[in-house]
Image 1 (spheres, rainbow, N blue to C red):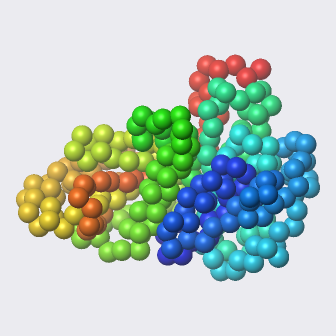
Image 2 (cartoon, rainbow, N blue to C red):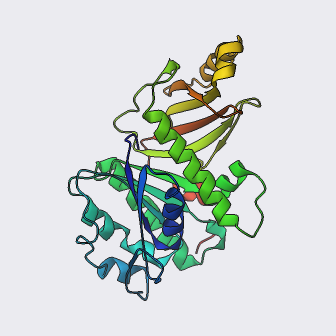
Image 3 (cartoon, rainbow, N blue to C red):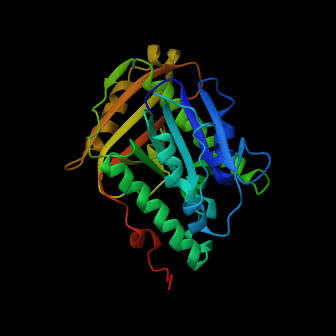
Length: 289
């Protein structure tokens, strides 16, 4: 997600809601696909996950995108996620596609839902590894909540969605800006499975939105206001010392410091892996039958 203008396509309720949250920024064109009338594109409701895969409608006339950067968002909880591969096939010609996958609370899913979730998540990772799509971003709703902090019940998902959207948006902004200092190492061509996180700069505490394993690349995007960049003589040393402390065997770590107009300093980060994330590891000792 390194370009300027991005097309955001949400599939299902969660995908539509996150896509809608992007619409406050002028850099995005958004489109939501669901079975409800308030969706931008309404499709027929199907009986189950397999039916959405077999009978997903042809939306090419409505999704007339060519040569665009597209972010497709889907959550594994809904049956409509069964149509994700058909949707990607209709979008792939001439477009640069990244998938954003939202993992629901696995412990709250039925056995059938867990199987559906596993299928969608794993196949998106295989699509990314094969180069059929540029990358897949994995996010765990429970870890996003931990990153945000205490969230009230009313507006719960709105708060999480907005935090996620703000993170992605600022990374896009930084990717289209020149850092004041720092150097970015391009992730390995094989590192197409990724997640996002927040680094609390003062506490030096990282909060990742997915428990990504077998990390190959980590990138830190620091946002610092101009006044601090001018006056804080220890800031550069603190940042470089922290980045160096994250170096590990076989892991590339890079960073950039960007000038902002915000009062508080902040840091967003990205982890990349080339390995499909294990379903068993994520479920730990849960028995899914």
